[in-house]
Image 1 (cartoon, one colour):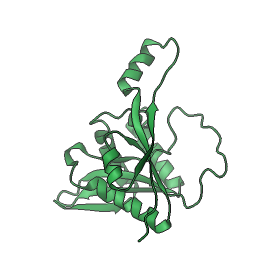
Image 2 (cartoon, one colour; image 1 turned 60 degrees about the horizontal axis):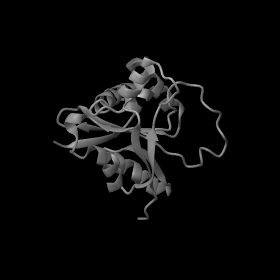
Image 3 (cartoon, rainbow, N blue to C red; image 1 turned 120 degrees about the vertical axis):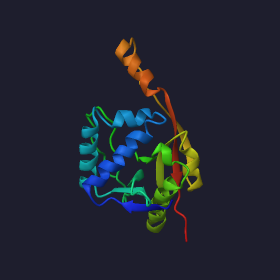
Length: 193
């Protein structure tokens, strides 16, 4: 079955892509996705669509199975041609993490078919064309896929939620999210043609 890469052009496609994200990050469970999606799927769709429409650096790409037309994976690339941190940003006063996280996911029943590679190649080709470094925060599971596309580990990450004398609810949520969560901060230098 052939796969096809698309760039997002309409709101409805993002909803289909994010449905796959919910499945993919639920199998296996990804606590970071659960934190960033908010209190409901509707809230997640509304927020991510708003971010996408109002952020010129936002580029969603997704893969479909050509035989069925089904969306099987999605990736959010943030392409900054100038330093986005040149002007300090105020600290966010929100309960979810800001959009600096890049998503890359494939439906669990379609893994191993090359969808992630198509989406990663799209972004790394753009980075090479623009002579930009690329960065990603990777889970343990995705690390090898990023390495195959030229990313190298810079530092390991441990995400945890901790407080003195936690409530039972806090402790239960920490456990549900899989804290501490381990991952990798990775970098890819542009490659010359």
